[in-house]
Image 1 (tube, rainbow, N blue to C red):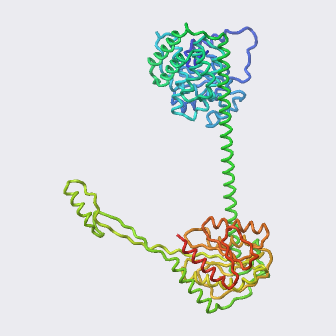
Image 2 (cartoon, rainbow, N blue to C red; image 1 turned 90 degrees about the horizontal axis):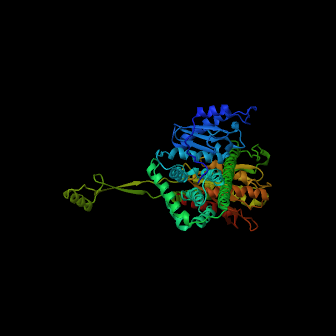
Image 3 (tube, one colour; image 1 turned 90 degrees about the vertical axis):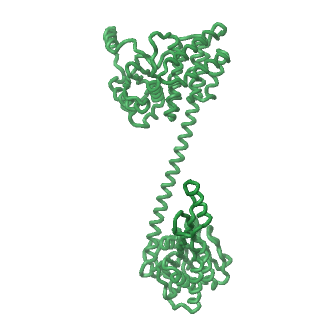
Length: 599
């Protein structure tokens, strides 16, 4: 069986140990440990603090020093209420580098922490005491079964400690195998209890323990191994205080081995075979744990990368919103001046040529569009019907009779004969329309119809709903506000010319987006871009990025082109107008569709 037991009964008291150590002197200078035992007192105290959570007991002392009295890496002394811990388990860490009181520090020394968790399991569940008259061999068998039983019981309340218990198996079991205290089939049976018992409580996997399982079946025979398996499986179900049952299992263990021993012959090199099989098991568990750790590290790295990317994306969006707010503030300035991309004034580059009074046809078109917008924005009243046992409401005679019948039968009336209908008006959604018109030299034909369309849409929106807003921006390299996002209808039509060069559609969209809240739901939202889209690659990329953000937010984006040579901006709905004069009608229809689709 095992070379040592983790539940120890001290043979001498502490004072006797001190007396023996005092006389154990050969005259040479006393050996000085590399690390003073006093330095480990703090580590032991902090382990004691963590032991409360692991074992649920507050009456235990943890001592940590180089070497232990029991010779085991760690041991639990029930009569002394003490767990002793070998400081060598923390190697190569020094005491000042170890802080068990900090949750998570145990990840730096998993082997030591696994042994500590194992002893904590003993402290929590090895609470039965052996009678004075018990057979020592039976007690030793019961304590052997106790090894896997306490780990299984601990795993029920703290399943996350499984990784550490797997690590402790590599630290504790191998020394037991290398220095056996029994021989023959008892040694093979002990290895089975230590390895396969941990398999059956879920510490080790079946595939990892196959080498030991096959060797034990070969040495012990299938019937004996099955009988021993039934014994340790039954021991796993034993209560913590039930000494009688545990000793009964120990007796069955001894009886099964005694009955099979005469008929079983074992190989001469059994110890070597068992050590090799256990080593295969431990190597397999180490490989599995390393793979799991690598997978967890990869998952953590991926999560960290995603979090970092999300943080960068949020920071980028916040920066873009701040830039859009600054752009909108500079473009929609009260003086109506043209601005550079950086927001500074560029009055000599304005495309505005003047203003004029709207024609009768434009006024008529604005009135028609206003009526169309009101019709599209109209929402039917919603009806909500509720029933109740008492008025007000319309009386339902069938329910009334049912209620009378229930009352006559002596049951609690559940019928509700009165029906009340509540009608509510649905709010009319406002309209948000932004128009960005390209005023580079290739767009001269669009100037007059777009100027007319901008006035018509702004006038109709103001007549339809006081919360509706429209705005128009002319852009080349610079930005100029032709109409501003106000609730008042413009009195005059702003005319402009197309003589510019290059394009700045990205900033124009930012200004319209921020000025009109094109990303906010609850309104009919439309962005109209009048352009041939003959841009450079950087200009196209910036524009397409903004268009994608708006469409993802539910804003409709319409691109109007006048020539067959025009390019399509990805993400927009392309509408080719061979006749520039049809631009007002197309924009009005798109605005009506946008407000009709609003929910």
